[in-house]
Amino acid sequence: MSQAAVSLVLGEKWHGRVSERTAQRVREAARDLGYRPNLAARNLRLGSTRTVLLVVPVLTTEFFAGVYTGAARVAGRHGFGVVLYPSPEGIGPARDPFASAQAALDGVIASSMAADALTAIRGDQLPLVMLDSDPAAGTGATTVNLDIRDGVRQVAEHLLTLGHRRFLHLAADVPSWTFDIRARELAARLATVPGTELRTTAAPLSIDAARAATETALSAPGPRPTALVCDDDKLAAGAYKAARRLGLRIPDDLSVTGLDDLALATALDPELTTVHLDAELFGERGMEALLAVLDTRDPARDDIPVTLVIRGSTAPPSAP
Image 1 (cartoon, rainbow, N blue to C red):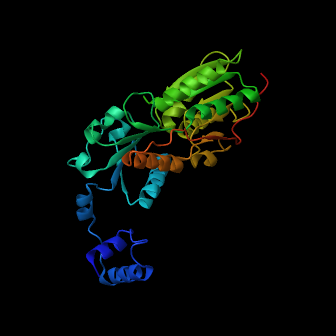
Image 2 (spheres, rainbow, N blue to C red):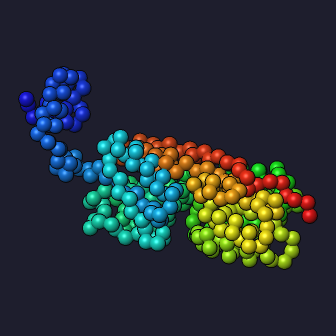
Image 3 (spheres, helix red, strand yellow):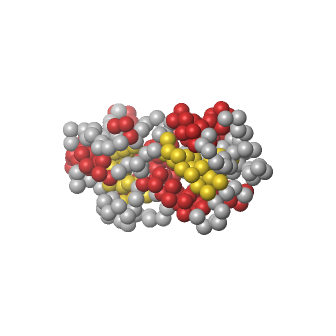
């Protein structure tokens, strides 16, 4: 057989150019010989590495594992590999993971990070897709976002409909666009309802830090909040511990909400009312956006919908 015919079959470009029977014979011969294409040589000829870098703040969270799973699924269908890389301690600047990332990669997807943290990796050459990032930041990067604003609106509407008017916001002590959005949207929505009160306390993203911050806030002088809005489910778990230390019952004395819908949400008792974020779909959309950029196509611009999951941690406030 000609080299061209074999190349067409092994490159999956034989349809309409080589017969089905011939293609099958080539595949069988390759299998019997143990032949594997030399991807390095092919990529050198094509001027492409077929490799994408996914940068995340940390590797140990369920959410970012889902983002990777979704991105790798789409990448695999298009013959790309995904390398997962954490930025140091979840903050920039991220170090170049290769001798020269620009020579080893076709593009970068960064989740929940600042674009300027990626300068060492991306330079001004590599295509970049930012997940969970400000689309108006002026970085020139393509952005893909979950509809966090709507998620916070759904939480606020749920609690307001139950009759809550005194709120405590347990905010993530992380300088990030996504957490800024949560704080601004919650304040804006509650401000439209007369008689509402909103207090805010911040804590690092850990259960112990959330417990300490919540315990202090709920022990402060004045009327106690009846609803606690947490920036994520891990903070909500810390709030549960604080409530129990103070002798408060959830949801009888205090309604609690989260945001993420991690497996932790259903391990808590009562189960946590929270906003479901589809991390795998998030990763899929991010990879699809990068593929579009690489093909000089316009990626989809719509935010990914989110859904409030109502469980046992919310109820109408108790009578004073």
